[in-house]
Image (tube, rainbow, N blue to C red; front, side, top):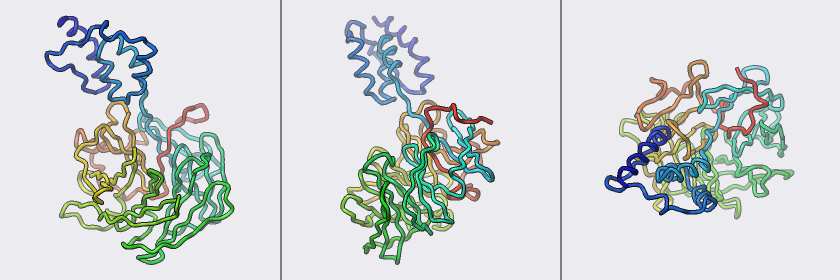
Length: 378
């Protein structure tokens, strides 16, 4: 039996190396017999299809039959793509960081507009000259107009696809340090609803604020590091008592603080990403104790950060795990700038703290398309 177990371990070792996951069997515990795991294929497929990528890979090391079934139902996340506006013309660039491929779409519908937010494959666009705001899906070319609203030094975000009945568009700006103005809208509305709120803690807005939607609430990271929370269900606003994350003693709040901070959400958690030090830092919001807690390990998460909106993936294959990806390509667009927490370095080298070339509206992460037939490659 022990010999059979060792032979099976050898057969599975190549899979573990490819997936770069540790699925080794503990010493002295041989693999189970096929007869001990004799579940019907249909039931086994149903069970294994419910597992995340990490657990699926572990299950595939149980025996040859489980490996076959687990591989057949394995689903890995797709990395988002970076979308970049053209310097002239209407051809927008889409960069796939996993394949290191550049794709192009001609989108005259976006002429004269700039990025504001992206979620569920949809863009929220703003036209500064006319104050026009609209949704646009670059893959289906569908466009949904919204009432005009002047966006000066604030950004806007939305909760879900505009096809969803619960979709809410949200923006906030400060009137004074203790008064904010919240404007909301939904697809099909003829005007925006604006309400002023008194705040207990100072809140300052700017184009470098960050907004995420998490558990039916909008979270907005302000210029000074405070987090405001808006509940669209009951139209309430509050500023959390949690102070800004603690940084190294030699770090001075200034221009780097403005350029190097990001916020993301995943599975109900709020994350703060700070990249202005030699090594990026990631904090998770402890909402119960109102404090930011620095994360020592990422647990397989990958962050795709951007000034306007950031994304998180947990089930990516290969070396993209435990990393931060930035919306800046090097070597003629053949490589995205990233930081690996496993290796403790930037790729390419000497890219840390290089934010001078990033403008807030010059790039955005968006979900990868299902169909590439409409794209041009260069």
